[in-house]
Amino acid sequence: MGKILCATRGGEASYRTQDAAVALSKDEGSDLVFIYVVDISFINKTAYAVRPDVVTTEIEKMGEFLLIMAQERAQKQGVSAEVVLHHGDFRSELIDCARELEIDLILLGKPIGEDSVFELEKIKSFATELEAETGIEVRIVG
Image (cartoon, rainbow, N blue to C red):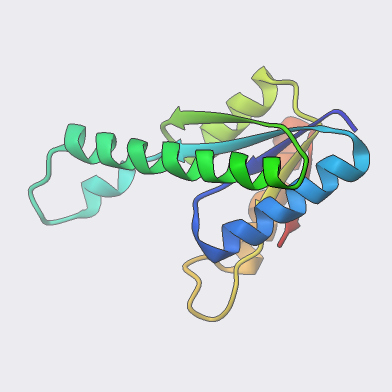
């Protein structure tokens, strides 16, 4: 297969996505990379006075922790995984990382339950757009 890039953000849905990525990597002998993107664009939408540098640092620490957890989950299942942390717009950073690392497959997580902030149809649309723009296969798993 080559290289798999798995977007992660933490939480139960991400665990299922990570496990699917690990299983696929193991089955196909593919390299696995987990990515977390620090995207603080939401700060412009809040009425509260916040310091972007402090928020960025805190989200970055959280992202590093979540990546370490994903890497450990993979190791426990016998798969060595790389981790990358990017800053910026999720879509742009995912594409840049995929191109930079010569990724063959991008995995996105499937929303779980009615309380998910993500909608499956929007994730499917996003996946289709990513494939069209990059030429890289995108799968929704989890």
